[in-house]
Amino acid sequence: MAQERILCWSPRTADAALVGAVVTLSVLNSWVKGSNGLLDDAPVPVVAAVSGMIGLLLWWRRRWPGLVAAAIMVGFVIAYTPMPLAAAMYTVGVAYRSVRTLILQALAVCATLILALLISRPASNVRETSYILALVLGMLVVGQTVAIRRDLAAEAQAKTEGLKREQHLLVERAQAEERARIAREMHDIVAHRISNIVLVAGALNIKLSARSAPDDARTAEEIRDEGHQALEELRDTLGILNPRRDRGDVPPAPQPDASQLHRLFDRVASRGQDVRCEINGHPEALPAPVQRAIYRIAQEALTNAAKHAPGASVALTIACRLDGVHMSVVNGPATQPAADDVLPSGGNGLIGLRERAALLGGALTAGPHGNGFKVEAHIPSHPGAPHSGERRAAP
Image (cartoon, rainbow, N blue to C red; front, side, top):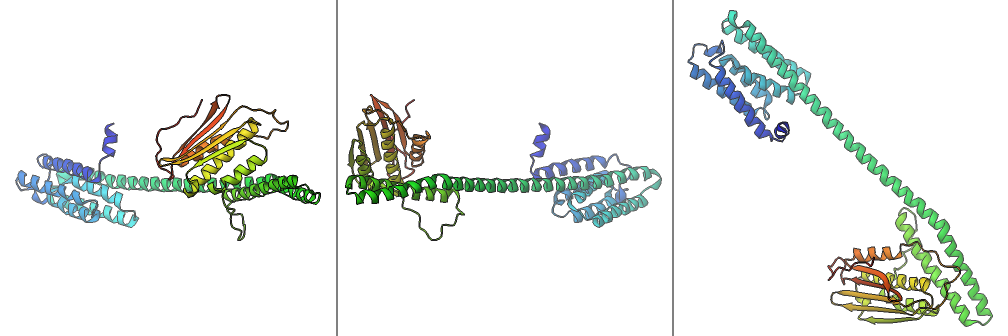
């Protein structure tokens, strides 16, 4: 824990602690060391004051490591201060990478120690000077080792970040390729089938028109229009999955909105579904995302009623209020037997509607209602606006 606190120190805090420790040791060492350099005959308080000032030079060791080291070498000759010199050599080892510079610094230290030895009492200071030389050169090596370790750690971190970016790009590329593959398969399977339905409905329309069967011809025409619209919407969806797919200058098909609700109701009524619609306000004046959500909710709810409750009456209400749009689709129990060829369902229709409503800041609930089923939605007039009263889905 103590080590973690030390590692969290700022550089200025660490420098202050180092300078304080070095100055304290240098002052105390003035009374116990065997030589005081050029100040050998000076009073101890004077030597202590000079040693303390030499230690203060370490405050600028990060900004000017070489200059501070040279000044402390001069101070070593004057007052024989080994602690500041060792700290200065450590800083030089951390700051410089050039082998030539480090060798010159080591030679300068050796020259400084020899000079300090010559001007003091040689017989009593050779061993001490050797110890100090080993200490100072050792700190130079330690500083260089720390610098190399930091460089290797920074290089490893940069390499790791580069690998992460490369992996992210590979994942994005794989996702893009997978989306393109899905788009191709959807086009080959679904779009091909829908195209065949459109072509068959068109041919059937021509034959029925020739036989003077207007009602059946109109039904075939509606099938053809539905298939054509589904094909256009599918191609737009494939364009989202595979944006690199070249569609030339063909503009995207317009998305259905509230202005097409009446066409939706007409198609529903034409297939024999009993639907009562009530629209209060002007949903066509709302923002485009809200209009698309209204259309999709109505479309999905009416389709589900036709699939799961054939022959049931459906009541659809759309009310545009100040706080947003309130929708309600209620169907009664089925009055007709289910068809043998029940349409397949992915089970994601209502989930998608809930997500669409939530993205616009609204909510959608769906569940049993009496003997039938009810879908209820609230969508703010402006996407992202908060709505009053969070609605929870039925269990």
